[in-house]
Image (cartoon, rainbow, N blue to C red; front, side, top):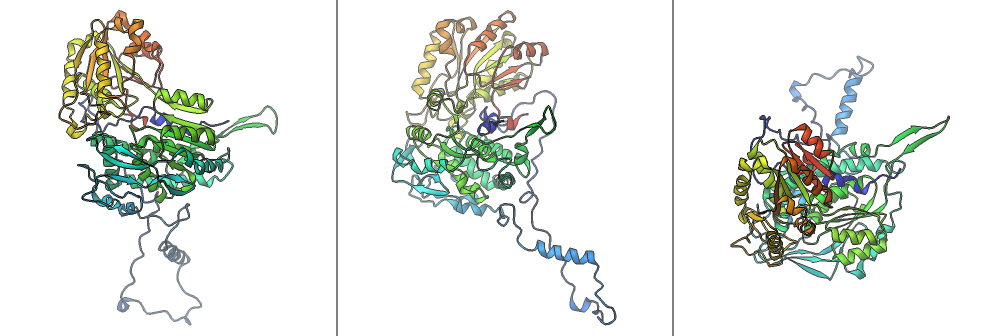
Length: 605
């Protein structure tokens, strides 16, 4: 049985990321719950810390007189004591892990070897603590230079071809990235060709590598758990994909928790197989989780650490050899994480990493012919890759995500806060962001919309709770809003205006959190439905309302939608929940009064 290995972690990150550590603390919902305890710190190297030293020898004057050897035929040291002494002597020596290397000390200063950055000016988001020693700072420098276009066959490679990345906050050139060109892909093609279809390891080949990756995960999780290291990555994420510090830090924490979950023996448990008795003596069927071998992973800009890390580690755990391409605008984050993984024991030749444009990556896929590709990004590119690769691809593309508020009105403050987080956290740049809200008429008199408006007005550019939109311009979002306002009965509930007093370049978007009301019967008209259900990857949502006798129309609208990624049914009415859940389909559906559209399964309530 061929396991779906590359997509192993896809379900874990299929709803992008929103943590309970969000832009603001949620209002209390229902019964008060005990505060969440801080996760226990990992034992050093999964419980392999140095043993305590034996007690010091007593002073010479206090030592008992030596026994006369002639008085007894042999020493009176008890055998168990002798064994204990030998054991202590062994523990004082450097211990070695299954990686065949001494246990790392997990000091933050180790980050000094994890970077090739030349110059970096964080412009208000300077890297702090010991991690700052990883960066060669320059008082006059205004850019960050990535000298290497990638890592291939265990070595970082250089390139003379450069591409400038524009600062999303002020429009200046601030990252200079070396990118692989179409004529330079041969080493990457050859590297993938060295991996057979049965992978670098599988249940019948090199099973000790499962244990090796358990050790790597333990060490990497411990490193990400260090405050200076997590702060380093959170601020680096903020700098290239502007979002609030809480959102960026939550991305690091979710990644760290994922690695914790696959420490020790958990990687080989992930490869658990099955056996079925045959129909006569000596016959049985065995099913194994088998790797694909050479694979490719392509990830977007909005979660520059969580999405690529979870996907690439899932591929490595199961024995695949991936080539990873991250959007060049944010690839510095995963480059730094890859160097950290190397320091934690990841064999450098187990995966390749490259910076390139889409055309070059498409050429690489066609020439290298990976046995499976995992793509997270736009539906337009996804459809092209599906055709080019003859279906050998796993996709997580667009998501027009609906939320239905049931007839039982309760916990209005909490529901308003969740709606604000779902629609506008990370400036709405999540494939799981709330795109349309179906609100029962019972909520109209609850003040829900007014509360959502007040929450949206708290978002400001200064703390990046609202910020640049990297794939949709202000003009495009405004044009879409104006087209919606041409529909009869539609109106702007709040927002609808560009951000003020900023220096965000015009190639990016800058819009206040926006909600547009469109009547339900107008949404369902054929001329309007495609317009209303167009995904806007920014702080934009459509709101409508329905009555008891219009639930069928709501379900019809959900059935006609195409991008079924996430959804939420907000109700504690069991009959209502069963009716809606039984007649709808999504990748992930959250149900109950605490239901939301965002929130990776790594971070369920």
